[in-house]
Amino acid sequence: MSSPTDQATQRRLAAVLAADVVGYSGLMSKDEEGTLVRLRDLRRQVIEPGIQAHRGRLVKTVGDGFLVEFASPLAAVRCAVDLQEAVAAASDEPVKPFKLRIGINLGDIMIEEDGDIFGDGVNIASRLEQMSPPGGICLSGKVYEEVRDKLPYTFEDQGEHQFKNIGRPIRVYCILLSADAAVAAGGRKLAAPAMDRPSIAVLPFVNLSKDPEQEYFADGIVEDIISALSRFRSFLVIARNTTFTYKGRSVNVPQIGRELGVRYVLEGSVRRSGDRIRITAQLIDAATGMHMWAEHYDGVVADVFDLQDQITASVVGSIEPSIRAAEIERARRKRPDNLDAYDLVMRALPYVWSLEYGDNCEATKLLEEALRLDPDYPSALSLAAWCRGQRVVYNWSTNIQEDKRETLRLAQAAAALAHDDPFILTVLGAALTITREFQRAASMLDRALSLDPNSAWAWNRSGWLRDYLDDPETAIDQFERSLRLSPFDPMAFNCEVGIGGAHFIARRYEAAAQWMEKALRSKPSAIWVHRTLAPAYALAGELDKARDSVGELLKDYPEIRISDILQALAFSKEVLDRFAEGLRQAGLPE
Image (cartoon, rainbow, N blue to C red; front, side):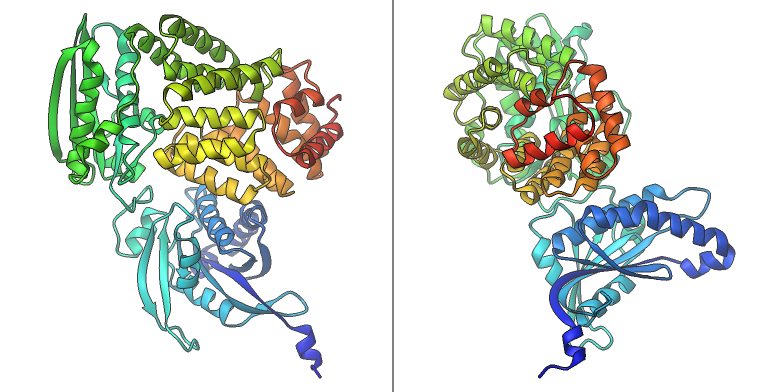
């Protein structure tokens, strides 16, 4: 027969996060009242919302520390990273900023009737927190084994440690998210996680032509080099949209290497005069700033693709000598027969990716002209398909069913001509998602990612497909992978919307609203985000915010109705019903 104590105590496996404020006693000795106020505000504005967003349970706070329980070690680590970043962002100068130490363990815990937790699982988390550097996160080996292949962070093995009152040695790993934490642990400063394999960023090439209109031509060459390099799975290639944020900026290569976490940087220039073209390229060791090689390539415009292939071969030969010439050949993309069509596609690209209605119309016009000149140009067909798909997805269409059919027709035509091109397969996967053919969509997107695991956009579209399949946790993982591959991408806000959608699916409405708010801060012109932000507010009980959100939506979409929104989205019926209910509460007409 069990005792009353046994009945009141439960056991379960849990991830435990322990944290405290570094140097809290010293801060209190200098300004007791001010420090207490700052800590109270930090808990209310940053720590508690962050824990809630990751579905953690705040067990207790003790002085400057707190203890949190999670059902998943993935959620615990994600929460820890977000908390460290949020605390750093919330700290005001000239007041000495708060810094956290965090430890995370996975183990058996005992739960008292009042919700408090005890046991070795908790004690180890506390010991890990104590050995964490300021701004750092220490994990037990058990946590590391659960998250090592699922999260895009750098883990440093700190070896085995013997902790007080723990009968066995514990393997410790650290995630170092700040320069201070790296220095405290004896490592080098890192602004971005280092890659676990060779990695490269291809910077925008400088246009040395007298004609500024040829800027797009230099950009197009870089675009094709990135696409070719991305086919090689033995190293990671930073996405084009991130590297192009450095265009026109004076930044040294070692700084770029630190910011992007890459080992190598390719830079160059393009000079085009009439039919003649010269491309120069330099491969640089980002850690030292030393040039590994420099070459120039001369030819005529008609041979531009051969020049790009030579550059690709040189880069691959410098980083991965074992890659065979046959693999380089498979990295070639199908080329348009008419370079004028190529020019038009290059001009269309920035308009395609702006996700603005006016730019969508301009891109469509340029792509239609390219296809008039070269009807069998796969890239032009594929981009034209995605322009049609945008009309459906963002409620720009005057005939949704027609645009759905045309999106799929154009995407299939492109894939028939280039069935092994990962970008074209991604567009076909997106088109099949829009038409709700989810099984085929998954097949196309999986194939695209097998061909190009570095495609931030393919991971983005795969994340959206998982949202539509009611698999929010996988969706979040894939959106986060997309963000890691292209951290400064102008399309990053779209991943944030997708993560918000995943939280909505999981009925975590406050977290959903927070992510969609973040997306709107990243891209304020994306008014269509209010279609999903308003119902998230409503179902979170924030009706005033929900009504304001609908008001913002109606400024750009004055005639929009709930039925229009439901036609544009591909979520499951149960999720769409909740969107509809939230929009009704927010005051949008049926």
